[in-house]
Length: 115
Length: 114
Image (cartoon, rainbow over all chains, first blue to last red; front, side):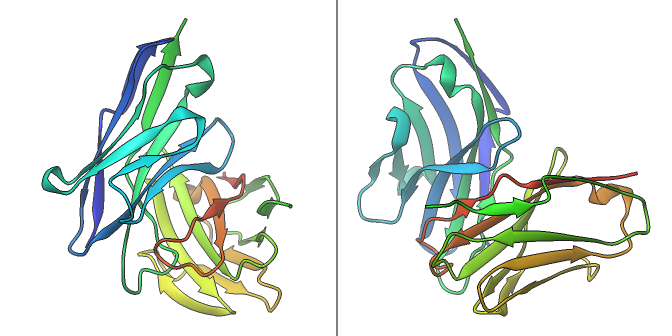
């Protein structure tokens, strides 16, 4: 079975500072990994996904993530935080095979950006 | 093109009642998944439908059920509502539901059980 652990339920940064949101996964088969963002009272929006094509994945809004198999990690980074990045971020994993439509999510990390 | 549409956005129901939520996927998408989001349990997978067939199911009691119509629109039903069913219910659609395909989420239906 696959699972995801997000380290830190709350992360606070200053505007312009580096954003680092941590995600570790567990999967018995090569995983597909995703980062989603959720703004208040909204659904989830895909930031980026890893599907084994490249270990460094670039997404929308300046975010990127690096897949490290040896560390079973898929941390999300952004060089310079903007106020508009304040939201909740979810890491998710899908195992291959017959896991149709089933994303397994981490518990989420709330990002606060201070002026 | 229109996104995933969920109706209604907000619902208040009484314990013991039943409720039906609706999801219209993006045009052309044939896979629809449902998730329950609560502060305590986070995002949990309910079930997935593709071409009117349930292909995958999460660990929820039988009070939670769903269906998909020939136009890919989907409904989920919760019978005999309990206070713990209060949650944001999210629907996601994708082309095939395969593991690498992007899922697009609706804004959700906020269900409150009193």
